[in-house]
Length: 260
Image (cartoon, rainbow, N blue to C red; front, side):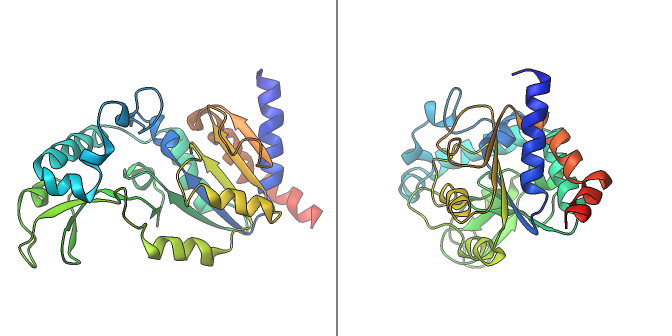
């Protein structure tokens, strides 16, 4: 698709999302992949080299906790050396400057790149990579600096500690799901999601079915592509800056006030 064709679709996406009063941004692995973070599925995916049941299940951790921790420390080191890209920084601008609307950002990514890009109050549906928590009690701690918390027992109950990710077979954080449902989004921007992981994958479909516009940004076609109001094919770091520039511009605000 040429630049003019891409601009037409970006303009369509902006017109769809501009009237939203409660915009949900749902970010998947593709958003972080643009910053050099490996995805779990697809070409080069982490699950191509490792078995999920060995590294991301309670049973795998019980069998070989050191193997699991070695893998998580390696992932932490890799992500600590990644930098947020312009698309992620654009989301921070959207959160701060979208006219007359509230923006809620939820992600299935475990990394901290959105926070480092300036996004606040991110809902991590699948847990947080740099959190270390107790495998028994409710204790948890931020382990950004040196992984030291992963090398010692829980300071409250002395049980073994584990990564803060949500593993296969575990429930997603109820507080995050409750906040998304209570938000009552009337527009949704889906970025880099494979649209294969539930329950996050069902949220855009439900919103679209109730007449709330959903815009997808993804380099590849997904199960969402033929369902949503608008699907843009390309990377987040290329497509998000011009889209969000339009959404946050004074010209767009003037157009919306005239239409209202």
